[in-house]
Amino acid sequence: MAYQNPDDSYRSEWGGPPITTVVPLTGNTVLIDSSTRVLYVAPAAGIAALTVKLPRSPENGQYIDIGFSQAVTALTVQDGNGVAVAGAPAGGAAGAAVLFRYFSLGLGLPSLWVKWR
Image 1 (cartoon, one colour):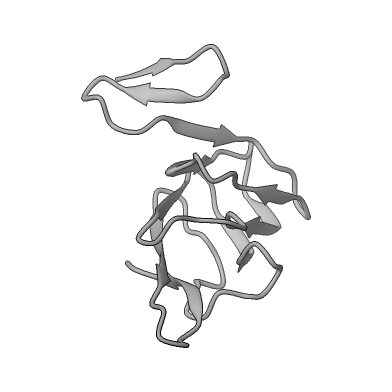
Image 2 (cartoon, rainbow, N blue to C red; image 1 turned 30 degrees about the vertical axis):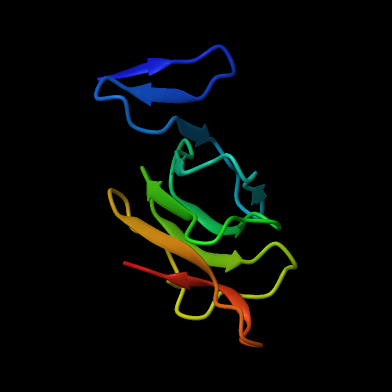
């Protein structure tokens, strides 16, 4: 069971993070803000193409869980600077989800989003 918040996001009855729901059209870009932890992509029907842009200034260890109600044939996942996230799936299957985590390793190593599961 989920409950709608005043900002049109949703929260679960078990007290998990709010669920941000988007209803994109093919070719849209979804910009995720840094407070989002769960994104539910719910187009009216399957769509041919979608770009999801992860937050520009995430916290170390931050995660984004993205679920799909309908198929997305061509999915592009980018970091906040528009660079493709390595290992991101090329599409989104109906009923599937993918999790990304951000790592800021320091020591001169790059900070990056990675596909976690």
